[in-house]
Length: 228
Length: 228
Image 1 (cartoon, rainbow over the protein chains, first blue to last red):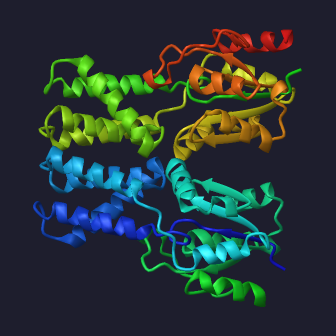
Image 2 (image 1 turned 135 degrees about the vertical axis):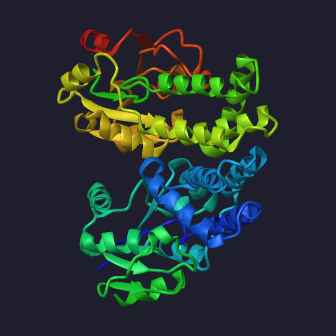
Image 3 (image 1 turned 90 degrees about the vertical axis):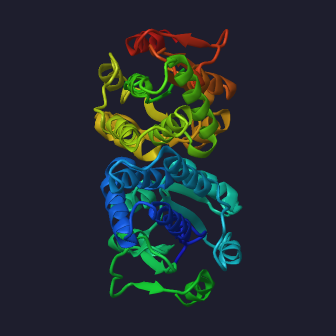
C-alpha cells in the first residue's frame, strides 16, 4: 500500500530542539545578572521569535537575532557588547554542533532504503539544513531531499505533485504534529508521529483523533509499515 | 539553438546590492562616534562576512550578525545595546524592503515567457528569496524556480540534469561573473553578463576572455537571442 516514506529532519532524524533548549539555558544564565525572572525571559524570547518568523523564517540565525533583540529590550539597552558577542557565539556553536542521529535512525533508514522511495522533507534555513544533511551521513539513502520554508498543505501538495506520489501511498514521519502530521492528513496522506522529548512552543499542536499513528522511536516504524 | 534561459535574481532581476551598500553606509555612520576610519570599518566587515560565510551562508541575517560582530570588535565591546538594536532594525528594514525590478526586466521576461523555457536560479536565504520572488510579481513567468546555497559547477550540473536541459541549448543571464558566468561556462553552457552598478567585493572576479556575452541591461537580451 505505502510506496513512499518521507522523513522530517530536525528532531526526527537528528537532535535539534535540545540544542535550542541548551542555548536558551545559557541565554537565561547570561541575563541573570540583569534580571531575576527566568519565566519572563522565556516569555519575551518566544514572543520575539514568533513576531520575527514573518521576517526571518525558521532557523538558528533568526533565533540569535531574536535573542539579541530580547536581551537589549529586557535590559533597557544596558546589555554590553561582550555579552552580545556571546550570543553571536552561541549561534555559531549551534551551527557548528555535530549532527547527532536519534536512536534507531541509522538502522531503520538503511533498512527501508531500496524497499521504499525515501524522501527527506525538512523545514528551515537552506544553508544550515544542507550542512546538517551532509554531516548526517544519510544523504545517499534518500531518493530526493526537499528543504522548504514552511510545511503547510500547499507545500506537501506541491512536493507530492513534483515527485508523482499518490497521497494514498504516502506516509510522512515526523515529530511535529503541526508541521508533519496535520498538513499531511489534510492532503490525504498518512502520518506517523514520533514525539521528541522537547517541543518548541511554536510547534505545539493538538494531535488529530484519527488517521495517524504514534510510535516512541523510529524502531517502531518497520513493524508499523509491515502491518499496514 | 537556445531553448532554456535561466535568470539570476539579486541584481539581475531586482535591486539588491544597493540595499546592502545603503545599510553599510548607515553602519559606518553609526560607528562614526566610536571610530574615525571608514575604510577600516569596511575592511573588518568584509573580513567578518567572508569568515562567516562558512557558518552562515549568504543572506541578510548573516550580514547583520557580521555587522554586530564587527561593531563589538571595533569598539572593544563599548558599543551600546541600543546601537546593536539599530543594526538588528537595519536588517529587518532590508528584509522588508520593497522589491524594485531593474530596468527592462518586466517587459523582457514577459516577452520571453512562452517562447523559451524560463528558469529562475537564485542564491541565498530560502525564506528571503521566496519572499522576494513572491513580491516581484514575476513568479508565474518562470517554468521552474531554484533557490540554491551556492552557484558552482556542481550546482548547475545538478539543475540541468533535473530539468533535462542540454547545456548547449542553455544560457544563464546574471550580474555575477563568479556565480552566473564562470561555473556555467565550466559545464558547457552559455552565459550573458549584465553588470550591476555595485558588486559585493566577495563576488568580484575576472571575466572570461571568450564564450560569453555582455549587455548593459536586460533590454539587450532579446536581440542577442535572436542573433544567436
